Image 1: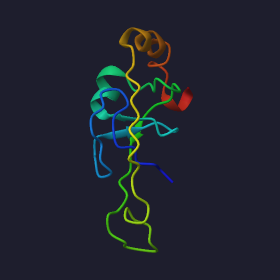
Image 2: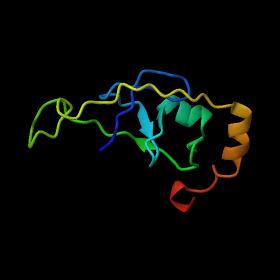
Image 3: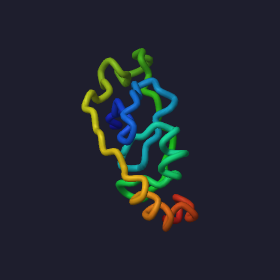
Image 4: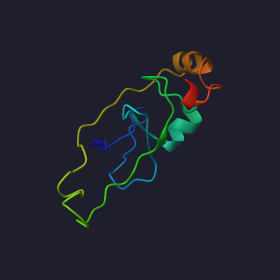
Length: 102
């Protein structure tokens, strides 16, 4: 079950459970789409993977109690701002490789 983390790990932008701006890697590292595109170059600074848009959990119980009310989003803030120089060196090795090939 996704945690639906509440903020961008780099810039600390609020990313509520219904945000269309939340991007995650396969380990659920969470960043805003601006940081993913402009700072991270679609390379997760924690694992080297790529990102995709985080799904939105339904607010309403449409079926079998699979909704935000029963499975709320995390409230735990994670802040790990990256060093642009270090990330550019790291991402430089990976950004030209498709995430599916990393």
